[in-house]
Length: 170
Image 1 (cartoon, rainbow, N blue to C red):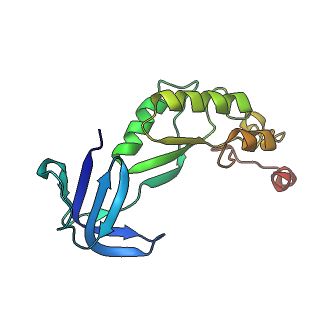
Image 2 (image 1 turned 135 degrees about the horizontal axis):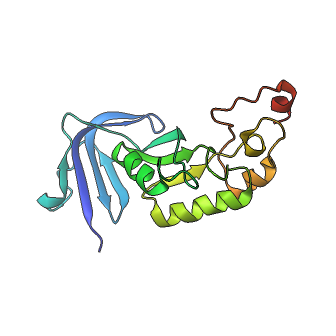
């Protein structure tokens, strides 16, 4: 099905593209086909038109610091629930902190999170790896291996790396 959607009359704001004007966005087949000030020439079913008058229309947000807690602490949050909460707030990508059990300090944990996210998430999930093994602040994690496995950055979230020379090496 090649469904179309027309978002009309919103303030289109995208600093990356230099957009800031009131206009319309036409989407077809899940892809933006037109961004313009007036869409009178676009044919779209009235059921597929969203009136965005008085609203701001922006690209999806990215949260660089969230706590999904999976694996290990699913009673607090899961990738399933956290991704849906993020999506409701306008986020299309969230970066999950490494305070999980096991912590995100090895490539297999990154792979596990990606597998769960592929199955359960409605938005993009990018893990953040530990700076130190187990976030213990004593020994560097295998940062190159973690980077190769797809982490977006490094943090010992909530556990400061007190050793300045260790942090400098990181």
